[in-house]
Image 1: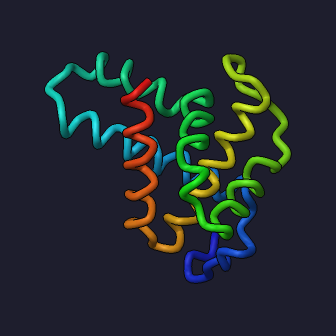
Image 2: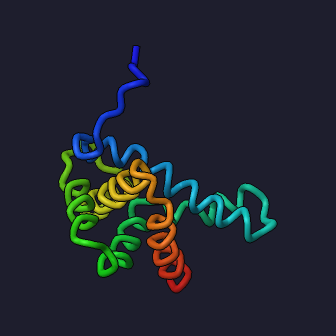
Length: 133
């Protein structure tokens, strides 16, 4: 049984645990934006969502936000990117897959600290970059 009264300090969280949370953060941000600004059917919403949350889309997102990151955020991103993974997505390069893990780790790290405003700032950069492609 998990002791839900105990909280693992953020600095002790593994990059892959942070990415586990961050994956959902990005997914929810994208789904919320798409659903809030369109009346498209679910199938079309999903088709618009997939390129943004795919490893390739997340790789492009990292490129878009890199210059806006603090030194500490860059460190978290690199820790996530360098985390060892047993598998690689079949539709992504190793570089794309590792970068996507880094982005997810960063978003998870920010989320677990309650830094929703910073998440929104970074997401706005990501969203704008994705819309220009």
